[in-house]
Image (cartoon, rainbow, N blue to C red):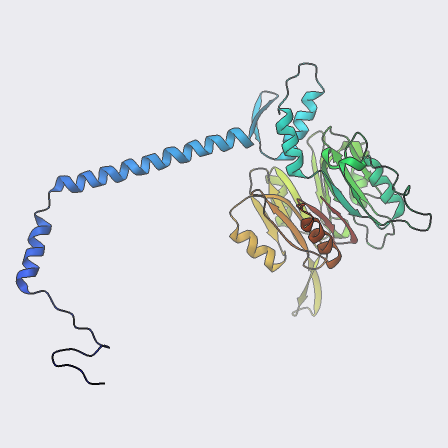
Length: 371
């Protein structure tokens, strides 16, 4: 293509350099700038920062007013931030005659819905299944089934339950595994403080409670169990007891020093000791503190990465066989890697407009409970 005289090539662009006089003019203009203008700009920036800080403080106070409650028990003030704790304390206060309710009816209804009011459970043992649905106030599970058809998975909603209203009254639930056992075992606690377990407790925990004359399920406030008889239990008198299948000094140190909110046990991890030409086992677990801290060991890589990246505290967590897990964060987001049968149920719930808030798994059982 021919170019007209005096035009440069389209692919190149000529840039003029400022001459010496132009540079001197720029420097003079810079140094003669009024210092008061700079000071005014700085003051305006500081004012804007202070306004942003004030807004953040207002947001913090609003969140605290909306989601936290300061509770005074035995002249000690403490903050209760989780739905389970708030509903439990509100239920206790409603038993009194002073009508000193912690939550309004509207707040209580909202919290029960956020926590989850329906359950879908797979309990392979028929006796255990009947005991669970009875504890949740569900109607006769066999009334619409022939004698030959016994459903192993059942969904319980407030509409299909009696006064206890299924998930509206359940504070905590967990599966209790028993390797090689044909009996389904589980633990439930209601907002009113009543507790129930069905099946068998880990042998060492049962022995320990019996020795202290506290061997009834009514004495257990919180329970999580794992492989090889691992357990963590909180009793109603405030005592916490625990045990692991293999020696684990880190776990003992964490639960001894922390105020524990949740404990999840994973499978035992086999480590190949090349030096001694043998295997040894290490435990896997997650501990969540009441102050939002979390500690974990030998958990699935995907969950480890997620917990390192996520800045929000943990609301619920469960570990199952292999690399399976479920976790819900305080912002309501969930993540899971579940057995196909469990994942299918969760997807169906979400497809029908529901949302999953918790899944209870156990490394020694194929049973599961979905809230």
